[in-house]
Amino acid sequence: MDPGETCANCGAVLGGEYCHACGQKRFVASDRRFGHLLRQFLASATDLDGRIWRTLRALLLRPGLLSREYMEGRRAGWISPVSLFLAVSVVYFLAPLHGGDFALQFMQQVSGRVRALAASPDERLSAEQLAGTGQAHTRFTERWVDARVRARDAAARQASNGAAGYGYRDYRNAYDAKADEVSKALVILHVPLAALVLAVLFARQRRYFAEHFVVALHYFAFALASLLIVIQMRALLRFSLPAAWLPPEATYDWTMRVLLPVYAVLALRRSYAVGWGAAIAAAAAMLAVIVAANLYVYRAVQFAVTFALT
Ligand SMILES: [Zn+2]
Image (cartoon, rainbow, N blue to C red; front, top):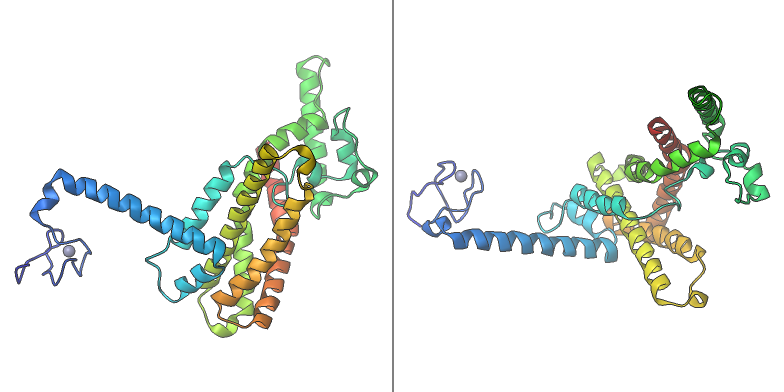
């Protein structure tokens, strides 16, 4: 390199292979060739590829490592927490997944009274389902369903001169067609609440809110990724084992219910570099807030948004 050589991009005097002002690599004659284009393509593909797998491996197998690296400023070797969460969310969004603890269907969002009205003729509802009061928001929101079904019924009868009506079952079908997508898109609602409780619990570490938010993002990225893996395992077992050898359906829910708290303890312990006692207490508090947020905020918003869209 000649002394006094300047950056082709911004004109700053170069002190090495990369410009200190704009970051562009020193421009050399061979950068004009086609081979450069090819090398660049391969490098970006393998670099991104390498980082994606490294980051995913760390997320799944080394709880808390990504958050710790982020807090300590070692960031270039990993996919950023926001990109990681978005990437996992996209796969989660596209996965043929419904029901479970996140995606509630119409029948899980209403009381026994409406369930009885919306059940199909061959559907047997248990006494428990018929007596149920639904979710925390149900007693406020159920009248919306009543009013909508009544209005649509009146409109349908008028349009058909009384030949055809609109019932709770019709509304249930419309609702369920949208419910999965809405609930998947809203999973991120849990993240700020989890971050808030971490900010309170670890206030003495004097961190920025964004750092707690990153810990929460990583946690939910893990939750979605592990849910996807468990669902795939289930599909694989169903495909490869005779029905008699299949584990009971509840096994998969329980796998998640054990995995998520264990991961929370390990992740908080490493992220915040605290002892087991503090990690277990913080994980319990964080999960309690996540469950409360799920029951009282997420489910209500999920219902309201799905209702608005149907
Ligand atoms: Zn430059």
